[in-house]
Amino acid sequence: MIAVGCDHGGYELKQEIFKYLDAHGLEYKDYGTYSEDSCDYPDYAKAVSEAILNGECERGILICGTGIGISIAANRYPGIRAANCTDCFMAEATRQHNDANILALGARVVGVGSALKIVDTFLNTEFSNDSRHIRRIEKIER
Ligand code: RB5
Image (cartoon, rainbow, N blue to C red; front, side, top):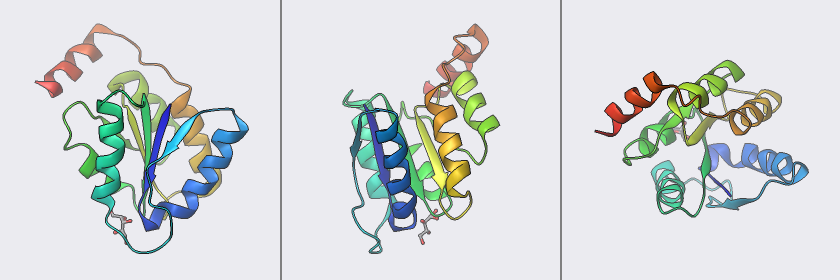
């Protein structure tokens, strides 16, 4: 199960991501926001982060205007590793090296086509399980 959340800046891109997830038969839960009315990105970062930490969902996608605010907020939750990615290289590397459990996207930064490729890469790349990467992640958690 994939947890998806956004603020007003990410609402439109979130609808496109839902179309992608539907087309690929991937299950997801929408944690809001549910309109383009102005709202506060930390609220959606919290909802998605908690869904992952309590085991309801395995991975998350968070979207705001830049991907910055919402990733900063999500990374305040111990155990969350949210990566703001602007290309597929970053999405692949953050799964392989950081075992990122949340992909953050900036709807005002990346176009829809790129965003969907980034989502695809993030969801289809496994953690390397390499001992040096495990060691570094453990240092973050400590
Ligand atoms: C909202 O206008 C905007 O500040 C927000 O979506 C995000 O870009 C914050 O980092």
